[in-house]
Image (cartoon, rainbow, N blue to C red; front, side, top):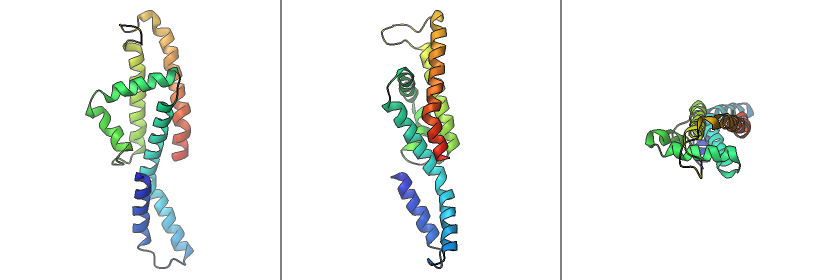
Length: 157
């Protein structure tokens, strides 16, 4: 909805200055300008919503790691959740680069959680001898991030 309403506002402002709707060259120029003006917000919200849907709706060890990391990341406080919420829910921030930075930060935090927090069924953090297996799991998380976010970011940029 945010993207659609933003598109309407931008397009109506641009079309208000059109002298002749019968002049395709003028309309074409307005549409090109509209396409470039809408891109920061549209690509940010669309990419974030699609990547979140891909991560939180999927099942598997890598997705479980990212989900756990995301929930722990957002529970750390407002300074960790304000930017992602402003990117997605409110459309306040219109920055694809900020989206990428926040996504990478959250995924790195998820990997940190994998190495430092107790796994289900354990009361303590993983021991040092478990790190080689955790490294493989961390690489799987990185691969999965690329598989989920790569096509979405490519389509939106």
